[in-house]
Amino acid sequence: MPRLIRRRLRRWFGLAMLLSATATWGGFGMGIAAAADTPQPANPDANPAAAAPPASERTAPAEIVKPVLPSKAELADSAFKKLDATGKGYVTLADVSGLGGFDKAFEAADPAHTGKLNLAQFKKAWAMYSGYQQ
Image (tube, rainbow, N blue to C red; front, side):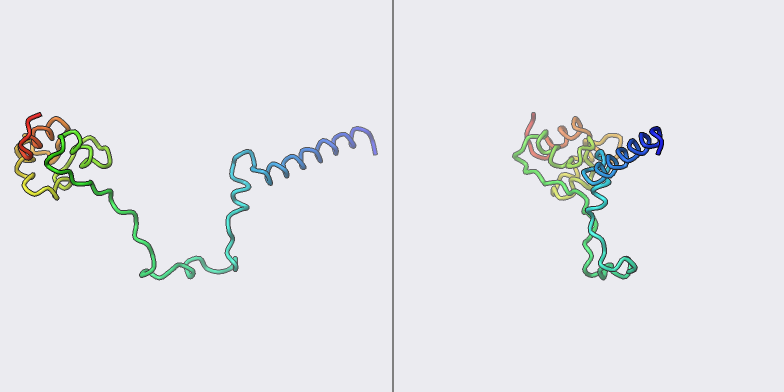
């Protein structure tokens, strides 16, 4: 065999071994090994839809994050953070629906009737509701 062909075969064989080793040992972080580690179904020809659990056994989708209701003794900033659980920067009438009597203070602090209170507006409403001036 000519020397040039032997060199090219050695180089190709070395690259093939390197690629094989990286696929086995992590695949440069590209998930090649992770795909090999995923459990495979016992019967690959089985219909995945047929293997789905019945509707009564399925778990419900993730619930909407519900705010923790603050007490009247809390400061407005703390109450706002609890009611704005997702961090959207405002609270809605639905967010404060569990606070009995807060709806009147909410409407009074919402001059544009947008249905949302930012922190400054919420502080006014909280002062009316809790009786604390901050």
